[in-house]
Amino acid sequence: MTSKRAILYAAVACLVLAIGCGRSTMARDRDEARQRWAVSRAEMVTKLAEGCYQRGEVGRAQQHLDEVINSGAPYAPLYTLAARMAVDKGNLDGARTFAENAKAIDPKSAEARYVLGTVEQMLGGQADRALEEYSEASRLDPAQSKYVLAEAEMRVAAGQADQAAQSLADAAGRMPGRTEVHAALGDVLARLNRHADAAASYRTALRLEPDRPDIKERLAIALFSSGAYVEAEAALAELAPLGPDFATQWVQGMRGNCLIALRRLPEARALYQTLAHAQPDSAAPLVGLAKCDILDHRLPAAKALLEQALARSPRHAEANALLGGILMTEDKPAEATPHLALALEDPKFADRASAERLLARVQGK
Image 1 (tube, one colour):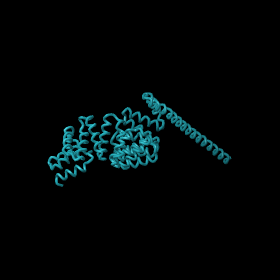
Image 2 (cartoon, rainbow, N blue to C red):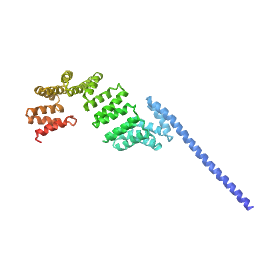
Image 3 (cartoon, rainbow, N blue to C red):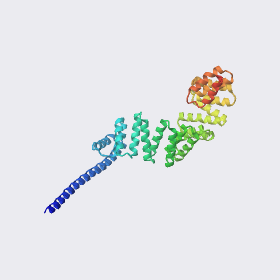
Image 4 (cartoon, one colour):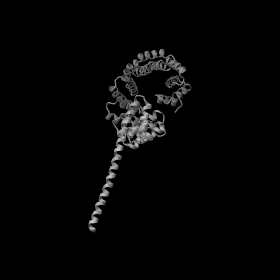
């Protein structure tokens, strides 16, 4: 009898445990079902909000988002969109919170990392953190160009232009058809004074989008800076009719420099004379004409032109350097010194080395 009771109690105990486990499993299944429904609903509402946002219906988009955010649905794109909209409103602290929520929900979301990096960059003082997020976004989704472009921009700002160039070169290999990647690589290489390499990147970008005047301009500058004057002059001649007056004058001025470098002085002189008539208050065409006179060994005429140029723009670096050089040939070092010193005050003056050598001679160094 005792044995029968023990068996009965054991059976009842197993039944109780089975019922308890069954209830626990059912509760877990219900919770998982609720969560799946919450995520599905969040996905649907986020798509609705995204559509409203893209159509400019910001108020309706915000209503959709608020409704689901208040439910606490764990859906990263929802918080990513909320962060972007908060940025548009200037609420950067709120945007950071939303972006961090998106990252916490889905650490492998490249877009969440990218948006968080954008917010950190806009807040300022968190450049390292912004770079970290952009880099992770690029690693998570290496086929998305905007991530690598953002990473490269931050690396350049952080003084890591070499790393930015390598990152963009790798991206160009992965995405050979993305114009913006090749153009950005050209920009960074030009910044590193690797102008021939920059020109190669710009050529690739231009093959992909042949009608981009901005890339044509950058290619022409890179060619000029690399000493490829023949190709640069041809590119600049093609560019001149494409831009507004101010752009045309700038392009023609650089084209004149190419013609001087190629010793095509009559063409250069004619071009600078045209520019001088078009820009009666500008010093640049007079400096160009003076360079033609210097190469033609007409130093008095060049000196007069440079003095006119400096009357218009007293701190014009190239005009000061050239006039200082002419005064040195006239054995007037005391007059040459202030002009050479003014030229060297301009950190962007291209031929600083020549001006420094002349000033050193004046000072007997």
